[in-house]
Figure (cartoon, one colour):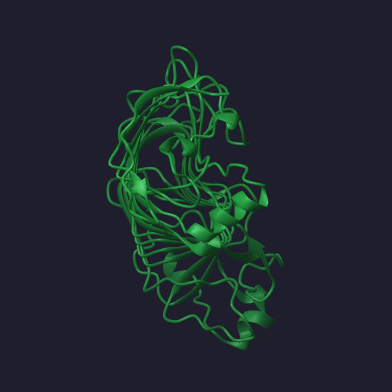
Length: 407
């Protein structure tokens, strides 16, 4: 079935009353370069050709699920809605230089999967690499994961997610391969939302709520640059460097050789990120394994009230903002920090190096050491501070360079 044979579904009562009339998009589509206004249902993974220069382009994107009332308030948009199984991706990108622009991807377990094609014996096809992808002005609505890089090799690098909205998805970006490197996320919006719960992908009135969990979830790979992102909701973390936790852990990718996250790929930058009042108290960086990683966090601002309320509710118990493990080097600049918000897990030889530069202390702390949560930490860390201050009074704090031992 070619694209010209796919029926556009417009905003009429026919959409709700006769879903059997919709034509699903089949996986043998060769091009989606000119998606028109309407809704397209997809029940099998669309595997784009293994070539240079694929394009998926619609006329516009917007929220599809979670609209209130009986009417459909969407504008001039191209919507692709998943009606297949509960584990597959809507799109599998296997070549180089792919552009995805102005489409809504809805209800899929994985919106876009970057993974090479395989030979009949299961080996990775060689010849053309996999990567060099740009996703621009798209909305991911009700997907479990918006963009995922699979476990197979063959590059899987250089991806830009530009001005994307992730609504009702647990994760924006998940990396599963050590060769997955070079990811740029710019001007993204992340918030809770809805997905279909009726079994009919186009039925937007019967939905269930979905909570954002880990925005960037890295099991293997790295070199990730995030800039100018707004986080309306996030229950767990902005950046999680995962270990052996979760359904996506692959024991065949050992921490040793090749490194899941290490010297070659373990760089992460979070810059100019707004954490909204509704987001609660998510971790900015969470590590669940000892990785030799380098992390820069700059101008990540969190609202004061949720953090102060959470600390007081726990009878001044710490609310962890940074959970660090092993020989990680992290520089935190121009951010606000709270009592007991940094925890670490270090040994005598492998321990975190933490640099705080021009950070403001909010709430009750009067000393920079009060932001270090010794009771939730193990071993030692190395702390160096410069030009930090008390937010409420702008009073400068003495610079510190010291090893710190947990209780």
